Amino acid sequence: MAYWLFKSEPSAWSWDDQVAKGDAGEEWDGVRNYQARNFMREMAVGDSGFFYHSQKERAIVGIVEVCAEAHPDSTTDDARWECVDIKAVAPVKTPVTLEDIKAEERLAEMVLVRNSRLSVQPVTQTEWQIICHMAGVSSDI
DNA sequence: GCCAACGTTGGC
DNA sequence: GCCAACGTTGGC
Image (cartoon, rainbow, N blue to C red; front, side):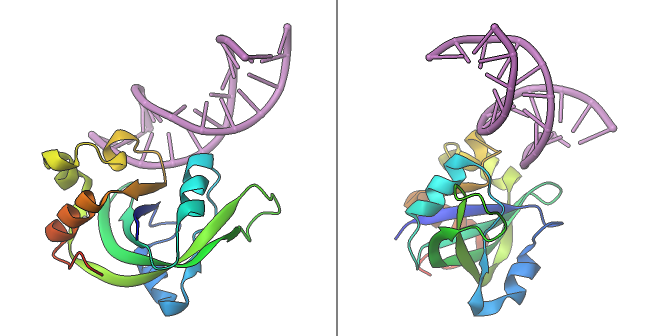
C-alpha cells in the first residue's frame, strides 16, 4: 500500500468533478511529464492519495483511491503517456493548505514543498498520517 | 500578472 | 552529448 498526491487546477478538473464520477472513477489523464508518469506506473489498485487543488486554492481537499492500474492515456495517441484511474473516497473535514503544510516542520521534505511543479507525487506513510490528522480524517482508509 | 523553477527541444 | 532557448506550471 502506497500513498500519493494528485494535483489539479480546479478550473480544469476539480474535486467536485471527481466526486461526480462516483465509484466508477476517472482517468487521471493529460499528464505529459515522465516523472509523474513513472509514479503512476508504480501505483497499484487500492493505493490511496490526496487530491490537491493548485493555483488559487492551494489545499488538499479530498481523499482518492487508485481504481485502475496504469494504461494508455485515452487523450493521446502517443504511446509514451499512460495514466491510472482514481475515484473519490471522501472529502477532508478540514482542507490542509499549502501554508499549513509549510508551517509543519515534519512536512518540510514533502515533494509538494520541494518540487511544487510535479503534478503526481509520492507521499510517505508518515506524511500521510500527519496530513490526515491535520485534515480531520482517518489515516487508515 | 509576474516571475522563478523546471522540463523539453533542437542546434551544434 | 551539451547547452541555450523556449514553454509551462504554479506560488506569490
